[in-house]
Length: 270
Image 1 (tube, rainbow, N blue to C red):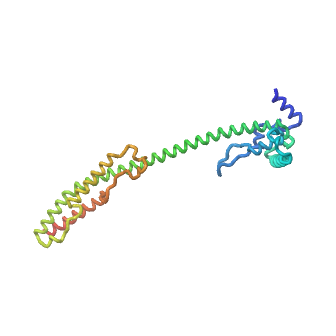
Image 2 (cartoon, rainbow, N blue to C red):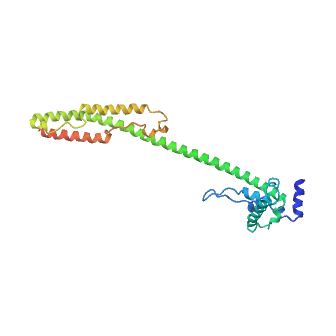
Image 3 (tube, rainbow, N blue to C red):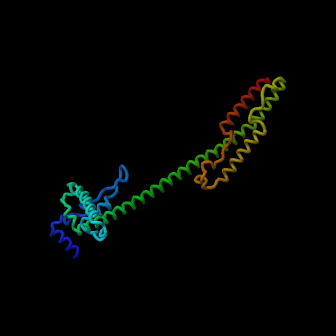
């Protein structure tokens, strides 16, 4: 009943706010605050705009009762100037609301209610934006974690494959080294000068072969000790064991050199 009487009172004085919808009042008094180059928030009535509407309508006289009259006059003038700029914008103010319409306390109450409504809508949307941002952040973190695990597993499989290949090449190097030594003895028997012609190729020395075998054993042992979550632990990128100078391609090259030298010594023994 009181609301109806208030509206009737506004209507009786020709106050144009009576015919304005909440959306029209929002369009007139609210602003969109830019968040980025491409996104804007829901419209909001700024604290300054609301305070000015309430001030010139006398709605907050009790708050300013101890302020000097000269100061209050300056504040009201400044508020009227800013509000008049809005009212002059016919695109925002098609109803032709005037400063006189805003000087009624009920007008201030109406715009305050619109401001509360807009703030609630903004908060709801902001909560949704923040929730979406959290979901996106969690998705991004999980995606990075998954990639880290995939990369780690790929590198782990690579190390395992290298161990297997090294062991396979070692299986070929051992008899190749035995053939190499037999060929050397045959060449020396054929001509004693051949004793100084060829040196023992790497890795035919027993110490070298033992060192390579020890490396493969070490790498296999360290692979077996890897924690299930090693990929995502701090320093996970360095958790995988490495060969030091004895990768499969290098050993295959050495094997080819051993066989070539053996063939050369066999030819010299003829």
